[in-house]
Picture: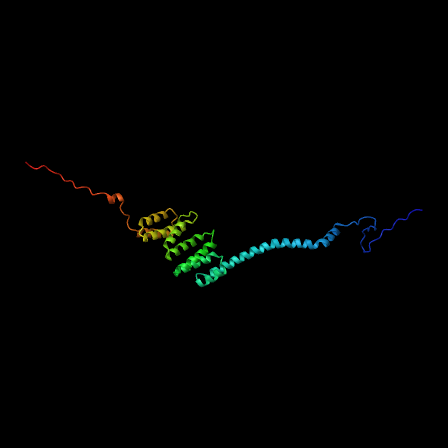
Length: 247
């Protein structure tokens, strides 16, 4: 008795001519598209979360940069709007305590009104927030001058000498410190010290108003005194000839 062939089932979908493997005859053959669909269905949440995380990393970084740039522009505009008005500057500085230039401007404003202790405090805050910038030396000069004008000349001179002897300072700040020290020396009667300090400024870069101030200060000094040798040299003795008496 001959065996009859097992009929193969057909797809129930019209137009689908794919062969369907009968149950128990082996694994189902899947196309690449079907495998992708199955993978997506089983792992779509993981894939979506990974893509979202990557998007947050890249887009978030750009947003932070944009935000910081916008904030810097906004802060700079607000600082410019405050101008030299002490009230507006104080309000701005309190709202932006890490903006060192605001404290520097407040220090200058306090110096103009003679509020030297307040000026010193503002300059010290400026130094703390301007570290590493070209403006830190300017704030340190402010501290020194507020000490001098506030009555503590000894402390002020010490601060000025630190600026003058610091090679890391800008030459303009060192020249200013040397000039201020020369003025203090002249007022104290130390004329030669003042002259030496003024002469030393010429080794730095002298430009514009600074050179005029140095020459004006040098012109205010008295003429150089005679050297010790000249001052101490005895007058030449008068020669007298003793002639013999006539016989």
